[in-house]
Length: 128
Image (spheres, rainbow, N blue to C red):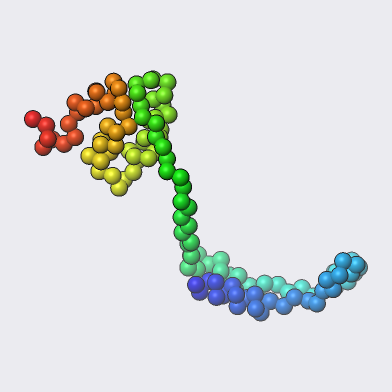
């Protein structure tokens, strides 16, 4: 907030010469060369660019549509797409436990892959 305040203060102190806004207003190259120059105050610029200047981050959240993962039925040609979608949505999600991930995997498999995974125990306590 201090950085924004300093930037506003610098802009308030910044003076712009009077310029005729009409389209026909033109100045000669001589007038342009002799026009007053108003540099950005270096003290403000150095403060803003300082490595110690506080950084302000604005977090924006966009509501994306729900990702639909097609269940995997064993078709090897569709495995790569299924694996990428499942990895991105479920497996790489650090908020999910291993048990939750396994339950999700079972929900996204059908036919032969589902039968194969059904025999896998989720936790050691459940397995005999």
